[in-house]
Image (cartoon, rainbow, N blue to C red; front, top):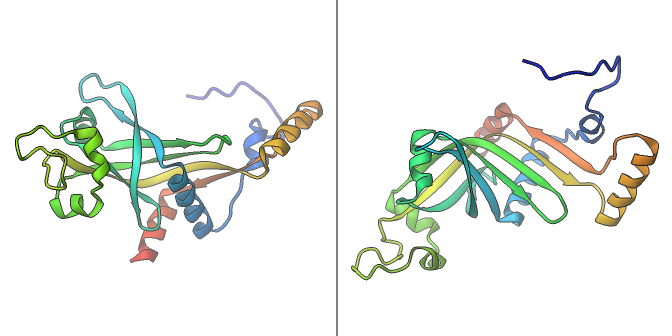
Length: 205
């Protein structure tokens, strides 16, 4: 099914994408993506609800990254709904956005890890603010609390946009582009393919 309704001849029907597309080498793309995600820290994880089948998004705080930024680590309470969602359908998306309008969308497969060595590796005392101490000597929000698990997202594809100019210059560029009737060249719009992620991981081994 196609929604194309424009006959543009030899001109791109989506000129913004063409004008802002940026294709640096894989190292640059992957490392810049990892740096951006780390600087954002907070993102929205979208899963398919195990109960309704509808898409659901939740704010998640990045706990760590692996493979130089391409695989994302988050904490979870294993009693939460997202655990059931990931168990039912591991295909998830993480999106990040900052105040400058830069953004990233990372799609991949998630897994729930409850191995205590992995949990202890990424444990943070700040989790006590979210899980609380139930007072039974077991569910105390310590690194041994069985409720604490890890959501690991192995990135398969990603699209992201980084600003080429400061906010003032962006505003000037957008205004001038509107007058000229041409797409504003304000972002570096990049895509990382599944093959590129796989090659990057192989390079890290």
